[in-house]
Image (tube, rainbow, N blue to C red):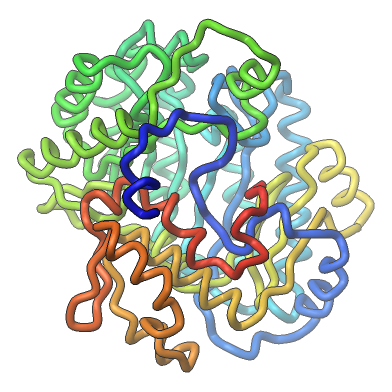
Length: 439
């Protein structure tokens, strides 16, 4: 069975592939929101690291492969109302017993396009954050950017408010491919902003690339990697194109549209592997299944590593999701419903999930496997288990399929396993979730 599963050509079909949480979002529900209120009202029993995630749902344009909650039709006044709601939510959540007095270790501003908002809105957002939380223990502040939204003045503001890691959504350097896939920026905007970014001395610059965008060819992909090396970022994150249910491309496929050709998974994995090899030759090392880090750079991923080891995360803004005191939860996906709830002094949460000890064990195991190697000792001690025995069936299966190796008690993914790690993880799930829709 393993050989058949891993050698056949797999077409890119509609559905989520990338796994960021467990249990799947489709199992979260309104019934668990009341237990969340009890968690808010109770001081934490354990000193887990705390992080903040702020969702900025605005973009110049919706990419055809985008599945996030974004709006392309909001003006400055509407954005200001959203920022005001964010700050109001911050004021309430920072004072509940579960959070009060805790000092965040990391902050992630994601979207959407955080760099879409004005410098004025950005400064006010960070004023609100600092009014409600001490930044004394803050180790990392990450900010996502779309090249065409950046100006020198805005970059000054981004640096001024304390951003340490700038993540630039390059995706591809070819204008025709960027346009075909609905990206708002073109290559000229990438090259325009790079000198501005470097001049401001951010601690870390990350650029994103996507293998298998519509129109991608072998030659184009090789050129992308060379151009990424020329940019000389501290880290490069490579995603393989997927088609979650609510993207423009997915809706077209489900309605029988023809025209676009999507690279199959074998092709995307081959391109990703080629990129790893070339980047290693250029002085980068594997940091996770998606990220390569320059060897002589002090790059860190505090947000990623803390979350994958069970940190609490406060989600702020519409559609954002996080985890507190053993409960996963997500805010209302609609910006209007979110703002209405905040302005009415209601909890702006749409759904939640109360995790068990086993849920948390599985979640941390599968997320840490994305790093490419896992020493079970930490999880054994934390959860009082023998990880190798607990997941013996999945480990045995994937070891026989040459996806991973268990040597001297450590789990190490092979290159083959690393390139398709998300497809391996459901086998570690409890049976009830293995065939569940992810979102």
